[in-house]
Length: 485
Image (spheres, rainbow, N blue to C red):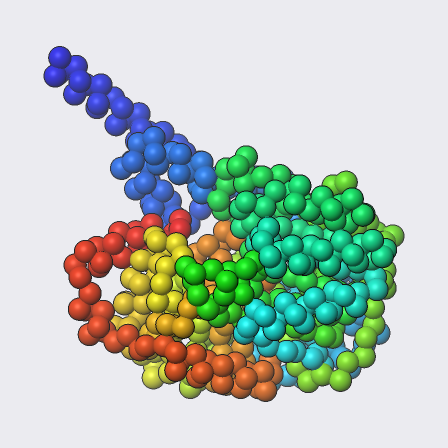
């Protein structure tokens, strides 16, 4: 009997291992993720395959290609017209600082992200101020309101914004909303029925109606985009939900960073929304003859900010935002200040950070002092400990939860957006960031960072060494899964 049991167990192990090899190696992925999945599938029979069904499968190629097609050609033609009509508002790359010419050219080449100049940019770090201003802009909309968020919760602020959208749609304004069903867990499409009843259009990203029937945890729409009349745009880290206003006891004060943009950079936000919409909704797409000045109006703005709107996602292997982060790190001469809720860099980014710190650059990384995802937070702590050993200053933010995704280089160049400093944002999620070439904006972000330091604690290598053996074990174990977190 015992011999039979051992034989059956051996057969199960062999079959499980063989199936794990077939499952993992049949799809192209980087070697770190490949072996991380092998570890999960081999050591956790059955359970590992259930986990793979949720977070391991790749995005179907036909869906990926659909993100590239639709009205992309027409949008590019339209944006070319904007460049010509705006003249000096859209300047060639050789007119900006030499230190960032290569990065500007890189984004132009990899993401067709033109350099938008003379924008007005306002920074928000408080949800109450952000949503008040955003709702004022929505209230004043005359033509179109386009909204795309990872999270759109059915709570107080979610209902407040929905009621306003219903009002504007009833007035004849075009209202379109994209939300991610996983990020908006608990918000069903019937929540948006009042908006759809008055002519608004609402779709879950890529047309998946519910998180319950969408088994993929990966390939989420993590972007946060709002455009109003094609003239005003928003991008950053905030989502729509009460927790982003500090109303959830678990997180307390919510510290995030978001931008309000007026100027030609809004064209890129509008174009990104339109591409995402057409990849999501086949019934009410943007079509060639409707891509007109109504969506891309010419606006003369007396702003001072030059920036590029850059998007990335699993529909491309280029990892444009990660490339931008690495270029910023390599550009730094004196200081490199980062805020991110999740610090799970791949080897290339990790090495870039280490090189910067060892070269004497003031590298600072601010992360939360509390988890919102257990494994992710322990992996974040692991990498924070490693970087602290290499001379990076690690700050734990104590005044609530810091969710900002910012980078400031030498007090001159900066990035604000939706992308975290982790594998998921680099490879698995659809993200969008603003890369900003304006010393005034960089100085504002620097001042904000310095204020946040007063609410933070510098965690030294010695303090990491004093952590319990059990905590270090959890961090190391979580790190093994970092390529798939």
